[in-house]
Image (cartoon, rainbow, N blue to C red; front, side, top):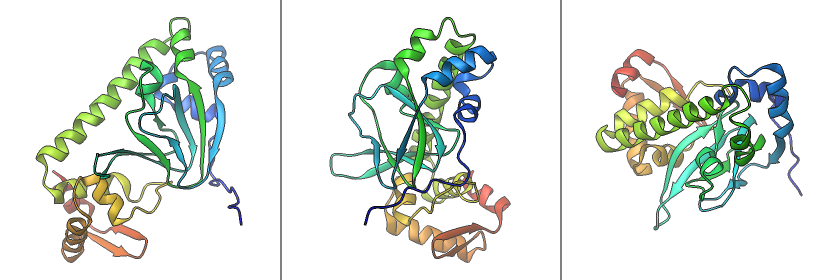
Length: 228
């Protein structure tokens, strides 16, 4: 039996998605309407591959509903989750603008609604649509900074600190899907067994509560200290 597509109750409209994106901050009403005309709605079922690593997709995707796992895969099949994109976030940004291959896979963690915009079309309009060109540079710079912080975390921060930071950034947020220990391990760059031990230790210290399909932060100040 085919899965019925039932998006999240809180689906951002085309207008809301565009106005929340840092790419389009400060545009005039007329300029917003031009961008809205470029955005095409696309829907995906849970676990669907929106973009595969190595694809030549030149679309930047703006999330309207659901969540997307952005990850790279090593030669031996090991995943490294780079980010979780939620409503208001974007993904496939670099490939959309530089015309190269996608550097990561984007997979729907839930049923997903996105608005796709051609990166080529945005670049062609960048100089005539207010601050669009500066916004693109700033937004891509922020993406690069996030990747730099991830590399720093994986290189220098202990597993407990990496896991604490992930929990602080992912737990208790709206539109957050359940993340398995395997997902957490792929985000922290370690083995699932290591994550299981670290979660148990945090629970024993009273920092978190682990229940089936849910992790609850109990002592945020102390968890923040662990993340330092």
